[in-house]
Length: 275
Ligand SMILES: C[S@@+](CC[C@H](N)C(=O)[O-])C[C@H]1O[C@@H](n2cnc3c(N)ncnc32)[C@H](O)[C@@H]1O
Image (tube, rainbow, N blue to C red; front, side, top):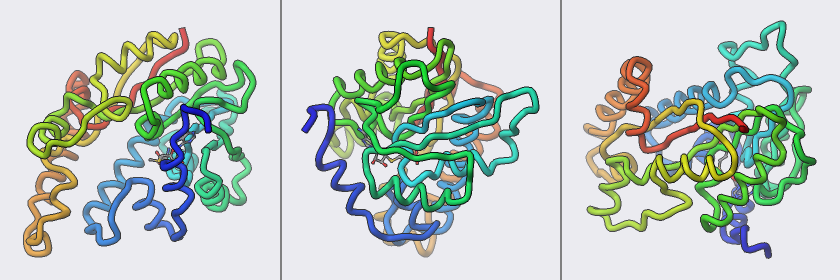
């Protein structure tokens, strides 16, 4: 197998067999079966905001590279806040994923929507001709790749298939967020690229691939995230609920006025343009 592909990663996505809208949300966000309702609600809200950031202003042909079960593209196509302006070309979205299983789920959920199409392929070797797309979106995919070489290769492929001045939206987990630092120093977890990179490293990788950054959007300002799933008291009083409210408050009320704070998020989406 190509050294840019991770067989275990593929096996994980291929083996997901459960169905249903709630399951699709849990699956895309890697949540356990007994996830509390407020976390599901906040993940749903996150997907709405992420879809809006990724797709806002999009027109013409868009590639969702590593579309998974189609959560983001389906939300974007339903979202009335991402209007198809009359002067713009109609939006068409191609969903692509290397897992046939995830792709089938996406295609099934998009059934009847004539603005979507689906194709199997890898982000490290895109099955499209040069300069085919107006925009490429790739959410939660570079973070799954086996090494930094594969991530660099994917960025080169995104560059290749974008039209001149095409837009790329792509995300990473910040190695310098307080939450990552807690995981690294307190929980002794391995925090390494391509999953975790610093904002400046990610910026450099984008520039090396030929992009310049237009904007970024940070998510997840919680001090403690997933570890609260382990809290046996959470059915009585869940501190996660309060930190969740705080994080959402920062994302929705403070960040629009202080864009520089986006870089303090745990998960950061970056919008950039092909130079
Ligand atoms: C965390 S999910 C994200 C799904 C979706 N983009 C979202 O944000 O909801 C990661 C997806 O990337 C896909 N993936 C991982 N490596 C890939 C590769 N090399 N090429 C294409 N897809 C890949 C997986 O099959 C999975 O569907």
